[in-house]
Amino acid sequence: MDWPVNVGDLEPLARDRLEPIAYDYVTGGAADELTLADNVAAWRRLRLAPRNLVDVSSLDTSTKLLRHDLPHPILLAPVAAHSLFHPGAERETLRGATAGEALAVLSTMSSTAVEDAAAGVSSPFWFQLYAQRDPSATDSLVARAAAAGAAAVVLTVDTPTLGARDRDRRMGLPPSTYPNLSDLPEEPDDTPPHRRVFHSRFSPSLSWPVLRHLLDTSPVPVLVKGVLRADVAAQAVDAGVAGVVVSNHGGRNLDTVPATADALPGVVQAVQGRVPVLVDGGIRRGTDVAKALMLGADAVLVGRPYVWGLTVGGAEGVAFVLDTLRTELEMAMGLLGATTLADLTPDLLWD
Image (cartoon, rainbow, N blue to C red):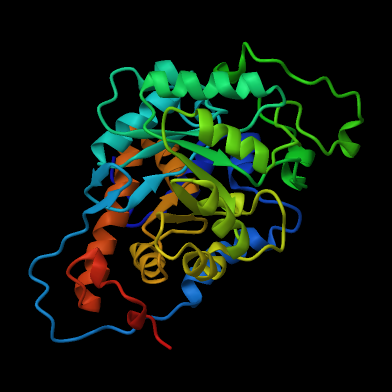
């Protein structure tokens, strides 16, 4: 097919191919969707200050993240239920990640069991974890993910309850199955739908003791995802996490929290380089990637953009998104006078 020229152009193509219920599910945010919009707008508000007269004939986007030597700092964020977007589901996504030379993070709520999704995958991947109501079920998920080859576990800490996702309330949730959870207990809930606060599977008791238990028992490094506050980030690092992901769940949980671009600097300052800091939310351009690194992030994750690519072109579409963002990042580096990621320093942001 003739691909569009940027990542944003994929969204209307994906919308035309998806059932409305699936499109609203992946596109929507919480409540009035103010944070959803601000995630994109915050990166655009930042202005750049190019450093001229620099030899940029050689550009290097490579980076090291935990134990991984990566060709670029763009990762695939965990997104649930890829079968809604392509028949190949997560296996197709991982094929695209391999083609785009990216590390992918598989969701607990994948349409494909972690063992099946990872079968034959040569590129590194991590496993996103929702703490279950039964602690032994959480332990089982971690053990399965590690046995399947996941090199790290990313614990989502910003979803102890449901968020006010109005689009989902209007449209209903698209029919999905979650093989990673098929053998795990689910809490029945007789509360009327309009009064439900708690998720039938996710633990509302997610707290520091749960994290410490995970850190003590996980056979692979543990990162925390969903952190916006500097004090929480510092406490998590003190507890022993291997990384922090600045995230507001794509604006899907609690509306009117800050955009991740605005929360990132405080978290970076609190972490003080002790572990990697990653960020997601609203990244649509290579300049957004560059700005995130200037603010102190070690890598970024993209979610909705690669779902659009998956919808439009399967693995090829996922790879297109990664390649496009990587190419735009290289262009931005050249125009900024930055030949390596280490050169993307805060002074390149216009003050």
